Image 1 (cartoon, rainbow, N blue to C red):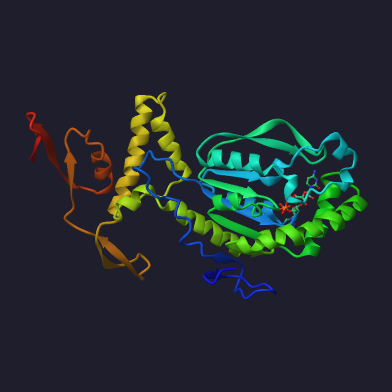
Image 2 (tube, protein in one colour):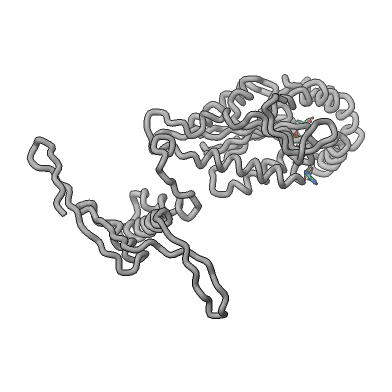
Length: 370
Ligand SMILES: Nc1ncnc2c1ncn2[C@@H]1O[C@H](COP(=O)(O)OP(=O)(O)O)[C@@H](O)[C@H]1O
Ligand SMILES: Nc1ccn([C@@H]2O[C@H](COP(=O)(O)O)[C@@H](O)[C@H]2O)c(=O)n1
């Protein structure tokens, strides 16, 4: 762990305070929200999160909790286990001798190829790995580009090329006895394996590989989560951090006084409708008006106000604010006057002036007529 770590958790082996470490994260995700050429149409770089940890440490559980809390973001989950090499017939006949916990068991080149494509906004096909057959089966899984990509697996920090793609690295740190008991339960109940085979595999391959390959990658983590999915504080903080990074809109980097309205499913839904070539004129106007109303409400929220006390019907004093007086709106003629209705609806009795901006002749002189 670097000297610039922010320690927020307590475990037995390190000096932490409450549940997670942020290892110099702040300055590193510079790829996110960075202006490229310009603005709206420039594809936003996805925020890539790596989640590593021992088998059955709770990686998938943590990922699902993060995804649940990132409800208004597009998230793609990629499992390293989808990239296991298929076993040959010879390997299949000696499956109990096969080390599924060694870095060479994974097709890392294909994983890198897929991740890079996903990062650059392409739809990818991910193999569909069958743990019973020990090979991929058809059909493969299509994964669409997303704002957040989560790569989860026991050895996702092993290859530096994968690590270099990640904006945030999380290590799920769960006691070995808990990992083993969960594994026994999962492999016997869900994968139909017998307990002796599970224990043999554990002592022969799983435990040594954890010590030799997985645990040594813990040092690359920005965040170490003890107790996995039970650690709600850590997950809340991670989600907050991702929201902050994603909220840094491209345009805000260029215009620091620009306020971008926080996106919700409602807002994205309305944008989808007004962008759809099939949308009727009536619906276009209806949903544009709703969006404009949000912009007007948001804009009004930035106007000055002063404190005001009122007496409520029950006789108590409520300290609130008074909207600023003497507001007027200026409507730019020929822009469709599209914001006038929303402004009138939000500000009772507001006076609205008109301004016409027009060009005289070909010499591009602009006159304003009010
Ligand atoms: N905090 C938890 N409490 C109880 N069971 C859990 C917890 N986290 C995970 N599990 C269970 O342990 C097993 C392995 O968890 P999972 O999240 O799939 O781990 P991994 O992805 O690291 O293998 C699953 O059956 C899961 O339901
Ligand atoms: N055919 C296979 C492939 C992998 N394993 C085991 O899965 C573990 C990794 O998956 P997690 O979801 O637990 O991270 C790993 O320990 C492999 O031993 C397997 O048993 N069979």
